[in-house]
Length: 208
Length: 356
Image (cartoon, rainbow over all chains, first blue to last red; front, side, top):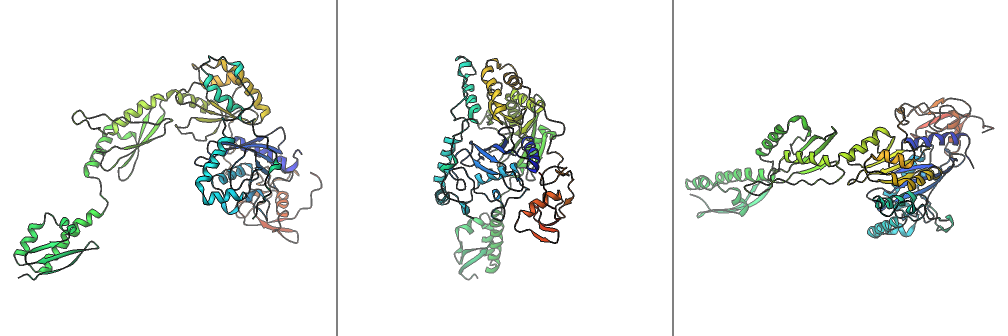
């Protein structure tokens, strides 16, 4: 449902802000001309198993925004104690009080930055994925290698297959060919996400 | 005459064995080491019948002076400071950006051919110039220093001047790269990084329609096609991707990357608007909830938090406070917490809006 009223007024401003004054490593934009559905990306923070990965997220802005928090989920699979296999994120600021800690002082940019921080510092006390949380606490080396492997498999910007191919337009002898190949895969990366359905999720709920 | 005996002497918090016998004075190895060179004096005292207590006190004084100083951190010898000062004299003090109080960390300025300023930090070990200094720079590629060797000994000769001349040569290697990056900084709207350092080869620039393009240049071949990452709505980016794929043939390594990209993508990169958002927002008048000055009812933010000063439309604050179970109502006022600073805030209750 397209936004109206306060939500639309605020989203117009927010989109300008997130675009003109972006926070490091995050970006967000409208899918179509409708500010209620946003796409976003988070670059995996350096020094974490998610480094060099580009994670795509989807944001759904409720009609009562900013009095209610947006719904945010990962579209790129991620191996993380607080993010389930459907991409749902366990983070207190994504829920309304008294259960959560959302306030209208937060916005799309600060939420994405907080999620990026959660990627750097998983919250083992509030694990959503019991197995991963257990592993994160008791066998950090195994957790890191699995998370890194997961990142390389699903979130590597250059490792996607899909549209658009440009081979036909450039001759094989072009000196640019080599760099072209890496660029082309970068170009196509945003459009080639796994089409995952939100139904295959585990039945765990975020407990707090 | 001397009476023999043995016991411990307390030197610099340490108990050390000592034995005074008619045949001579004996001590633990550490104590012997500490009084080396003073044996004739002690021997003289003993031979001339000085009291045992006086001899031992003297022994302790000598040992304490030695052990006490070696326990403190060794300072570099005076030559170290002379050498550093002399070298800075040679380079000229105008290139000195900063100097640590101990003179062991020197930050120097070097200008490249285009007049760009670059800093290099050298960390000098206290054995300098016998040991190698470490360097720290902001270059896009690692910078290895090859030390000139002394003709006589064949040992490397470390000097600040050698580092500076090699740093200058190293800067020349990246001139083209920095020319291209400076061109982006001057003629496009760079969104990220906000304050690029010289080692950063990435720029995220604005495209039209709230899209952006992340460009990462190749350090070795800056004029070749950089790594590109488009960010934004697919419907705006699709024509750009298609243009990129079909026009790559016109890319010329003889030209600048910005011109090449504009030709290949068939677009003009927007430049930074004069009054960018986010600057000067230390003073805001917009409602901190709906981010606008005029509300839907055409009111202006008439409430403000007493503690943090954030302005709010009464309607916005009403709607937020009423959605919280912790908010309390007294007559026609709502009492709750400021969304920003969580201090108490109160607002007059508004009737429900009927429309919109």
